[in-house]
Image 1 (cartoon, rainbow, N blue to C red):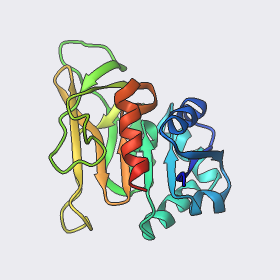
Image 2 (image 1 turned 90 degrees about the vertical axis):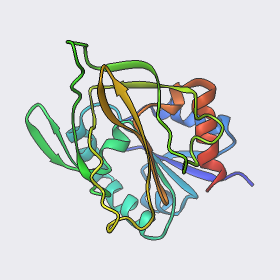
Image 3 (image 1 turned 60 degrees about the vertical axis):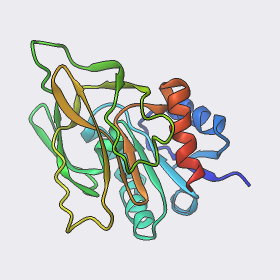
Length: 213
């Protein structure tokens, strides 16, 4: 039986490309903001494109922050993508404006600081430094993934005492600036890159996630 995945529609993100990517790997996908359906699906995917503050406003409007928290309290899987990953952290700072995130992980989302005047956004294909404990990257540890972003998490702040399991944190760098590319932390996973735009490697990552639901 296909796993039922809700792609949370809160006014931000590549909804249709995410839907097609999940269907490609065999998931039974529904795009909705319905509270009960999002809460009870086998998996919940939280997309995100644009500004941190706007995404949080949209997420709260559909009680998405509550859905995420309740799912995780019950050990039900959630996957955040791009800004959908960033809003899982405690706060974001953009253009001097600080916005509270979902605070599932401590830490701040801030502007990238590439060296030698390299431009932002960081846009294009990049390799990642995958930890040994990974499940998401099984079979695709050496592949490249597609990034489009100007902000990221440049320091991992979760202490072991707060973590129910030891998180697997994947890193990457752009022009010498190191930042979090993905996190696997029990039922909560997230990627800064776009798996739905990352070809076969991205499809395999989503397949790994769906198989584990």
